[in-house]
Image (cartoon, rainbow, N blue to C red):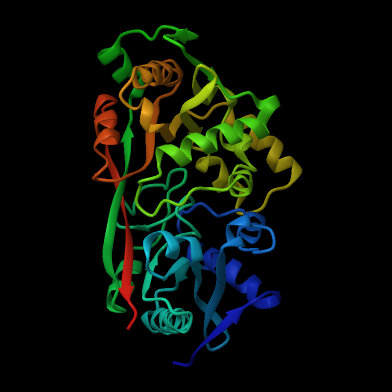
Length: 371
């Protein structure tokens, strides 16, 4: 079979790169098509501020004249500076059920990584540590939830046959009766106090969004500073990633805790909008968007996106305040999901246990040493 791997910069090849998943998942009812315009925006170094300190290369493998596999390779200079190793991160990895195409593609990506001085290939990151990441390892017969990657089971086989090994594993968690759990464990939720011991808990103020995003970014950067692969987000990066915040959540689902006027904690919940995104099939028009906003009112699955507490306030009454706020929010939903949780994040696992969240799906990061 004749395989050709080409670098992608724009034009027809970029269109082929963007369209390939629609061919691979055409008959998969659990796949959620990405909004094509948003993928373009994410992969545009002139628009995405993440690439101010990172390089991007896209590759597409053709079998004959047919697109068969694709991948993005990212090298982040700040990651190298913080962790002391130049890594070529791969992402947006998709391939038909064709081992030859996957091998040809990965070989070209690894060659590029070596040429750039990288010692390791690692991924998938789409394209970084705060976006969708990881390869789905199980749960293939279930619909993908918000912020979850989705792929066929053979992706892992292809990576391992190409010399990659599982280096990091995390999970999502789920409770199919969160209202019942709250009533049984905590009783009927009461309205949380507006202020307690100098702590003020409030919802996001949408009319002051730019400053609110700065407050959330400040808390996240402090709370997650020691997390695996974490790099602090710049103001521009966070604003870029939050462009469609109002699409996936509501102001009352985001709680900010202040202590004497200083933001110290954030509870960030979103709606599982994937059932509605499936209907869009990767394209958004005015009528589709209006229907989306109307149907969003009836969604019954809540997702814990992040819980962030600054280190100095992690052993204070902030956790209890956030739990009370969460119970007040979650009583209006049926199902609760949590985005990826690391198996070594003991505080997160204890919080999940309190809410009777059970492991749902597992995802993995794979790596390969480049000689």
